[in-house]
Amino acid sequence: MKTAEIHLSYFKQGDDLQSCLEGADYNIIEGLENHSQMLQHCSNHLNKIKNLIKKQKNIKEININADCHFISIEGPDSFIDELIENDLAEIVEYEESID
Image 1 (cartoon, rainbow, N blue to C red):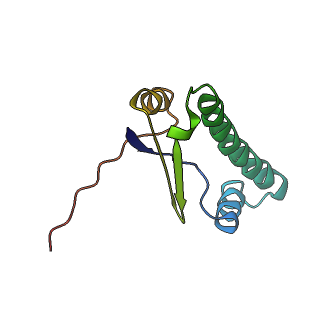
Image 2: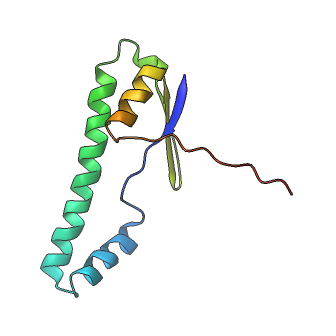
């Protein structure tokens, strides 16, 4: 079993919309379109993961954990490798700090 992180380009709804408006020089139509495209990208990302999960023989071996700003997915090595190969997740190694 391996664990990887899923990274979406979405952070906070107000902050993200504000960023899209700023990027569009406060053109409301363009800013809303940019925000909509960002959300569609996140939706596509999650749908690709969902479709790969549906192809697995034993879905019960796959776990997703989500917290405030963190999503991890755990499953058979071959499944996690497929997510990584498709740029849908990545293995992140954290260094432990010694105080």
